[in-house]
Figure 1 (cartoon, rainbow, N blue to C red):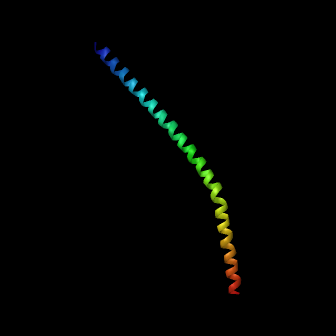
Figure 2 (cartoon, one colour):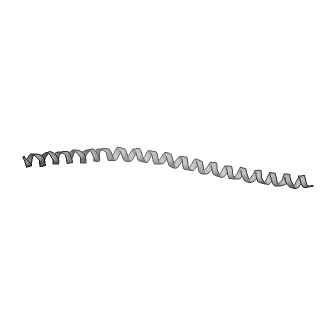
Figure 3 (cartoon, helix red, strand yellow):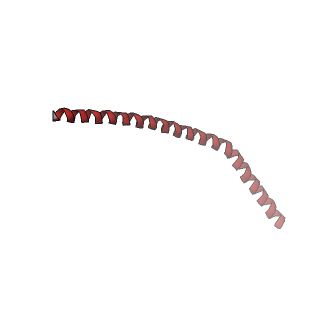
Length: 72
């Protein structure tokens, strides 16, 4: 009788653990998707921002050169 109760508790625990594993697996899939989406967004932003940053740096260098020539 006591063995039956212990076995029922074990079965119940195993079922709960399996449900927890399924939930964590789904959360893991969602997080992996979010990470992949974030990586893609970062790459897109890098592609968009690089020309803007390059242009700003080139303009700053040009202004610096003009300023230095004006001081001479």
